[in-house]
Length: 133
Length: 360
Image (cartoon, rainbow over all chains, first blue to last red; front, side):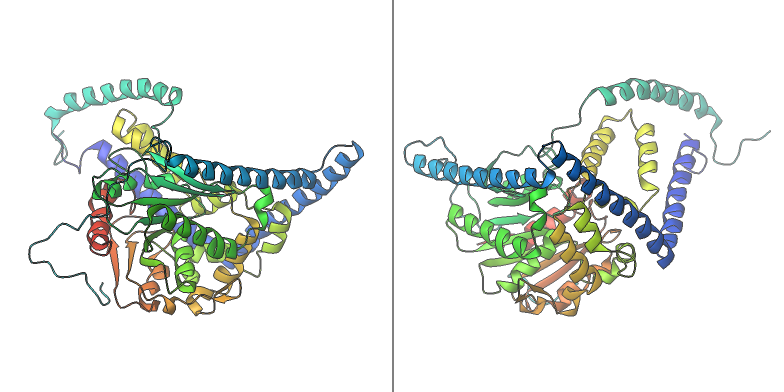
């Protein structure tokens, strides 16, 4: 069998690995500059600004069409979330109440005893203290 | 003409045959790849102990006949899903802990809804974590709890531990947790306060979209996604490689949005003012200083972590007030430290040997 040095597949994989490292290092260096941050955030800011303007326009449009706006939907979702939370609380309480009657539920499921000890290691010291590295 | 040194001419037909076989396998498996879903992830049996908005508290079902007295609560990073710690049987950190005899709970996150944009750092540190801790105490019947925080889950656990320094946390384990945010060089540059208008962003979008979080992670290694796809094609005949690729790729791209106000606080307090490192951090008006943490603490860092480099993580052990503290640097990257073959042989046994004696 050919050794790694002359195996074309291994050489190809090595080349790809080296290219990845080289490109990542080059890109990281380029992205470390304040100019990159400025350009990236200007582009991102413009997108966010456009998105906000579009959102404002859409809200006006929905109002004219007599449709609920995003803010109103969020308000409704908040109320739904509160209802869901209360339902979850009620569900948890019901499970706890049923625990005594039914052994098959979560709370009624058998739990192993909390008696486990760490396996003894011959000649081992007690848990270490002090900073280590 | 002579063959180059090291090239065995007799092996060429054998190699050509192997490559032809692989090419055929690639075509067959390539079709399979697109027509099937990946392995089922996060399948270790569990119960939802509590769910509230973005917060989910799971309790995993025991896999041992007896468990250690002190339960373990895992606090997941808010940017990613917790199933990285519960991939598939045999490659699940949760399953490993359960089989070792730990009683395991996890605080995992779902995507915050638009109405949760107002969640602040104090909601996470002073409400969600304490709420989960109380529920774990009530469910397990134990007053003490060991906490494991992964990445930013480690930051949240540290903030919680520094504010509630008199308990009930008994042990703290952090995986790849940043302390000096200036050393997250690229993130720091992306969020340069001279150019990054975080207020405008949050006021515009509410919650920070997952695509933005994912892009910022991918920008740290911009060539890696393309190269990983080349590697996938080369190895698509190899079922184990494909399974592993699909697991990690699915998790890596399954990024969560971040609640707007929470992101604003991370940017201003941590990225801009580096308050955790400078000992000036407050959460909801309460001081959160690492020196106030006095409990046993283990910090596992990865040698080749490109997301949280060692320079950003190394101050944790020096800054906490604990006497019983240890930092362990293991081979691997930010993700391979905690999941996959590397983690199975390195981090997991190390964690078990550290935690077992402290869990009784």
